[in-house]
Image 1: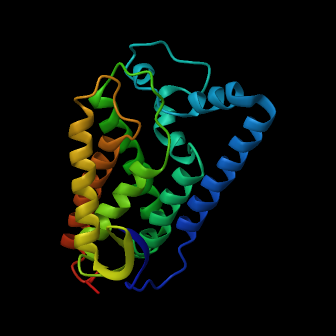
Image 2: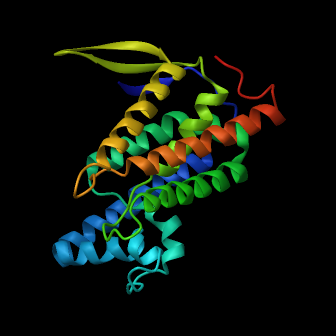
Image 3: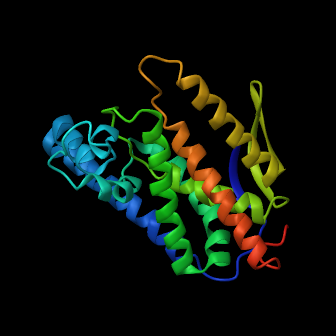
Length: 232
């Protein structure tokens, strides 16, 4: 299932969401420029300088020449591995981020997004503290947004592209079904990836960690402000 738009209305312009989308696109443009000028070596050097390297964060390896390892818990969010990686993340952020930003307020949304990205990265690091594979991408932080959305708008209808074998159909899917199914897939794929020798190319436990943090934040918001985030 690929979400296309949701039916939950928002009441203010999602400026932080738009700024995050713009920042990710700008950084990706910088990556393309580095790749064109410096080749794969120059691009790889940049990615490792701003991405999360578990072994460096945990002290197994010495820090590299880039940003201090704790700072990469925030910088890695804006770097992506390709067009599909970028487009998929920004699609989810744009669809679900505006409502969450509307509910939390702009400063609150920015803080939770940053915190969610850091917690997601730490969840990934915990699965293999000695790994030298770099972690990049906004999906962990976006998973936090998805968790909050699920708690606050579980019955909101999300127009989605649903694949049925060799065909597909546009359907209105409740957020509980769409995001619940997504989370189960992340959890299952994450558990299966633990049994591989080389690990997975996707940081599934970053998604799981970010999503669980989002559920907790959403539950707190619902408890403190029960009238916000009414189901649509």
